[in-house]
Length: 290
Image (cartoon, rainbow, N blue to C red; front, side, top):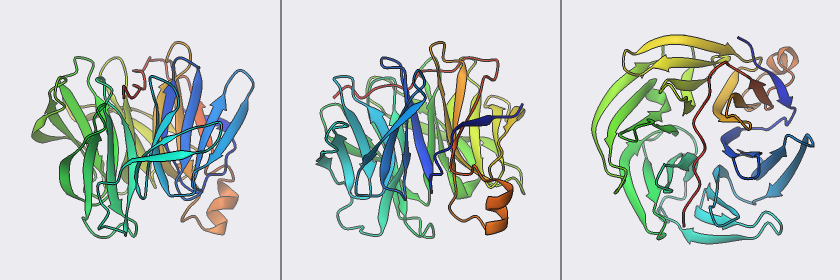
C-alpha cells in the first residue's frame, strides 16, 4: 500500500493529528511553525491558527474549542481569535523542555509528554491533564515522548519513547488513569528509523509512524509481528490517525526538518499530510471532557 498526498502543507514538523468526529474536521500541528491546522475535507480548505509557541499536540474539547500542549504547558485555544489561556505548566523549571505528542484517552483525559528540545537528555516526562484540570506525572526519564493508543477493551495503554525503538504496553485503569505492568510489545528493526506517533485500529492492531523510515507500519501487539505497512513518499513520517465518516481513512503527518536539498528534491511534498484507505477501520480521536 502507498499513501498519496492530501494536503501540501510543507510543515517543518507536522505532528499531533486528531479527527473531530462531530465537525468532520482533521487537526494537526506544525511544532516548529508554532501553528495549529484545521482541514475541512468537504471544501478541501485548511485554516491555520498561530499559537506563538512550540506546539506539540492539539485535541478537541467536548464543550467546544481546543486544547494544546506547548513548550510552556497546557492551554485552551480559541480557534476564532487565536487566544490561548494557560491551564498548567508542570515544568516551569525546565526551560529547555517542550511538550511533544499527546492525545485524549477514552475517559477524556489529555495525555502528553515532554522532551529535551535538543533531543539528547532524558529530561522528559509523561503527564495527564484530568478533566478537573489537575495534572499528574505518569512517567519520567523520557527522551522523546511520542505515540499513545488505547485498546478497544480499554484495559491496555500503548506508549512510545522514540529512541528506545520500542512500543511498550501498560495495564490501564479507565476509571483512574492508573498505568502499571510495563512490558515491550513491538521493536522497530534496525535501519528503519525510529517509532514516532501511533494509532490503533478496530482490530487492536497498532499503526506506527517511522521517522526516517518512509512508512507507517502495522503491528500485532500480542505477537510483536509486523503484519503490514503503508509506504509514504516522505522520509520523516511523524504520526497518523484514522478519520472520515466511517473512520476508514488514515491521515499521516510528516516533516521537512532535517532533510537535505537533495532529499527535498526527491520528496518535495515532505511536511505534507498523506492519506490512504487501508481497508480497515480505526478508533476515534477522543475529546477532552473538561
